[in-house]
Amino acid sequence: MTRTPVNVTVTGAAGQIGYALLFRIASGQLLGADVPVHLRLLEIPQAVKAAEGTAMELDDAAFPLLAGIDVTDDAKRAFDGTNVALLVGARPRTKGMERGDLLEANGGIFKPQGEAINAGAADDVRVLVVGNPANTNALIAKSHAPDVPADRFTAMTRLDHNRAIAQLSKKVQAPVTDIKKVAIWGNHSATQYPDIFHAEVAGRNAAEVVNDEAWLRDTFIPTVAKRGAAIIEARGASSAASAASAAIDHVYTWVNGTPEGDWTSMAVVSDGSYGVPEGLISSFPVVAKGGKWEIVQGLEIDDFSRERIDASVRELEEERDAVRGLGLI
Ligand code: NAD
Ligand code: LMR
Image (cartoon, rainbow, N blue to C red; front, side, top):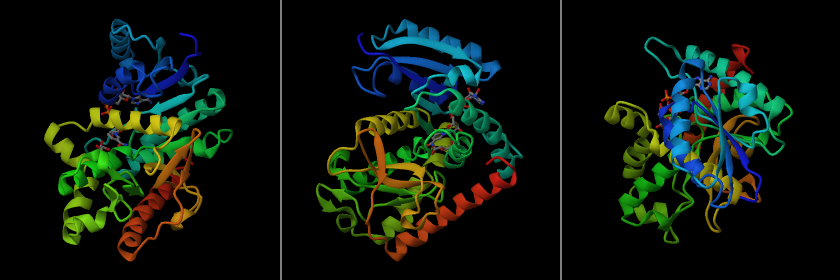
């Protein structure tokens, strides 16, 4: 191993996404097959032992790229010198909890984690928030890391992006590799807008290939937007391996770039593009190059799309106002 290992911090390491994610990171799928990684696993004190068990299994897999593993319940230690931070651990909604309670409970997690990233992360740190409500948790963390460039805080809508590709692929009976330029706009929630008006199927406009507005409106959009709930209903637990896979895709694409002729979806800090208020962490179609993302510009947005983007952005504004009211940003 000649390269210096990249420090990768995973919070919620003992959770179900953590279990699916860590082995793929250690095998080289997060950053590349020639990039050694040093893992930092952050958990709450009660779950440190379970995370240590996962660390034992990671050792047992003898991954050539795995340079070391630390397990801790101390956010400062976990984020010290980190290059990639995957914020997966979050407080799930439990019975009787209102939306405000959930936002407040997660504020208690993402505020100190943002502060720890600000205090100790490496200069090139890249942050992906997976824990829900992902966009607003990313906003909280970003607000407490004023010394870290705002474009380093992102939230995950790659799972929604991948779900949209899969649904479209089934509808048009084309392989997923033929599908390009799907876009997810807005919040990682049921209000998100999966957009195929700019997408392509083997080079042809996807909406024209589909040619079925009723399917688009009544089947495709709700299926993608409510897929998380459908998985919970079917599995009795929220998506884990597919979420881990999307987290791998998100970081790999950010670091290594989007393929020529395609883009991806990431929730990133808005610069006001497409009328999304500046500073909100909202999903956009983005291209990545040289380790940086850029919002795809100049797409025509018709009334059908505008209405749906605006609805999801309105929800993000409400979440932002709620966490502001709670003094979390
Ligand atoms: P899980 O309950 O199995 O695991 C969460 C883990 O986080 C637990 O081990 C818990 O101890 C830990 N944790 C809680 N607070 C922590 C803290 N302050 N620091 C470190 N660790 C902490 O949940 P999961 O299935 O792994 O899901 C994790 C999160 O990801 C949930 O919020 C879920 O809703 C979200 N999720 C997001 C997407 C997405 O597309 N953005 C998809 C699926 C799931
Ligand atoms: C998903 O999209 O699968 C999850 O965000 C659902 C959830 O609420 O955990």
